[in-house]
Length: 253
Image 1: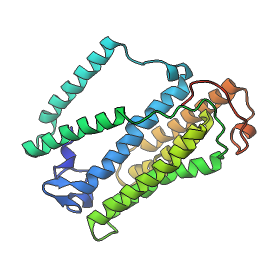
Image 2: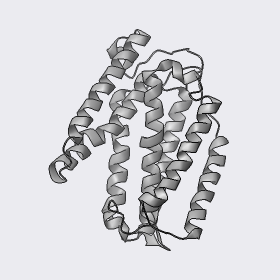
Image 3: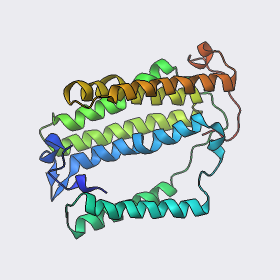
């Protein structure tokens, strides 16, 4: 399932097929793809589900039987991936990926969950939305431009950028994000694709319909915003401003 980490002929690599390739691994691509999927394939979908269905925040989504089923589907997808993307990176590369998954899973289980009982972060959506937009924009151009002559330099800069965003968001999370603030971050992050990347795909790569899909997603985000404002009974000017009243709903992440 991570063939693009190793295959230099992977169609999406572009300059990263050679820039940062070492010991049979596309290292810059590995770092960029890990960051991308951590945000857009894992974190944002979970937050969108919680914002769309508020009751899901305090529930386990899958029963024991369903967890077994989905684990089985994951294994099946991995097996099918060996046939769908035929490239043999070698036993050591596959073993390294498995070891990394186990190590990161072990580490993730030991990171404490930040669950403030109050949501009193006073940061305006006018700051959060551009901040969210900056994440994919900066990482996209950093990793795909090869501006830094040495690939290791790009990876180091990328690592420090991740650390900077993580420290800032963790500090804010301890003060408690409101739902509308979470939506602001999400909207900014997805806005990069909706208002820039999707139109590039339409105009220059002939992938017609991606911009329409992006605009449809904007409608969905606006609908979520409406639901949040109705749920909390707050005026938009209060919810979206920097002067947010303290909220005392227990168990909010």
